[in-house]
Length: 420
Image 1 (cartoon, rainbow, N blue to C red):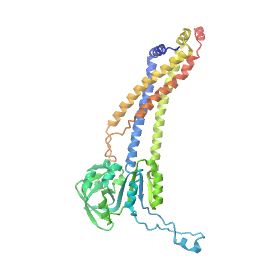
Image 2 (image 1 turned 90 degrees about the horizontal axis):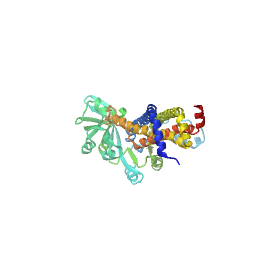
Image 3 (image 1 turned 90 degrees about the vertical axis):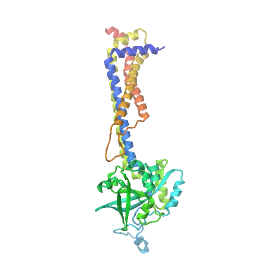
Image 4 (image 1 turned 60 degrees about the horizontal axis):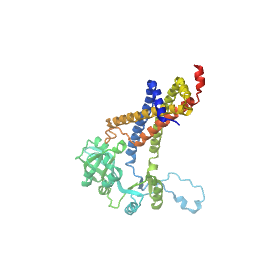
């Protein structure tokens, strides 16, 4: 019967007799696991930051009236041309209203849907910003501030002021950071907005909004929903966009198709709108895991080579063990246990190294004008990464030790002693 205590004592003795080689093998696992945790934590944290930058402000379904070309041309209505080959040049889009017909009943219907987390209407108004002699083209979005904060983390992008300031001030505006910078405006200043109909409306700047996307921040600003409706001279029933947030994003594709069919509106789901962005995220994650796992495999090969050297150096000891009654299985367990000890100690140190460096990275200052709300580097401390690291450390070292251990198991002690 195998005595595991004796086998463990022999394994420990073998490791300590070659302490330098044992330490190098353990450090290989340590740096492999540590680098894996550091790399995957930082890269997934960065991906989450980029995803949040785009996806947090993107509705799962955006409902609006899209300008489309007319599917039926006048020539199609003439019976004698119906079966012929009709070539029509310079097709013009059909006249479409921007507002969503029966928007309020549609919003109430969506809010009653169990799949829907929340619905918020918007009104888009094309304007010119006017301050002194400076005039800029822009877009003002009318919103329900409380809904935007709750559903789309709107307050995370307000670098000066707060959402409540807009809620309290019906003539307030959250000005885009790019517009404020170009026009040298600050919170508390007033700006005039020229509507497409020629009206001039003075608004008070109650905050500065910065999404991190320069193209948006250079033109886009936010006002209360009713103020946007007043800017374009419409009543409270006028809604140009309906943004829907779902409990499960995977429902966005079938639900958007159903809305488009039932209401003759364009319903754009988040996966279609951000297909290229999701592809980039998937590729970055794939590269991260591929590089990380390669590091662990390299560490495993290092252990394999060191244990192979152990066997050649310990031929006499193996022969003596077998000659004194140890079976081939016992000898194999000796070398497997060595590999597992190296894997366990190296993996444990790797976890400590990975966690420590990740903490340092998460506290390192990271300041950029594009992401004003981010103060430190993003790091993902998902416990799953540490579990994967430990499992892979034990698994790789076991496999790295198994092949040399089988070789040790098959050694004939008579041939070794006779050779001596």
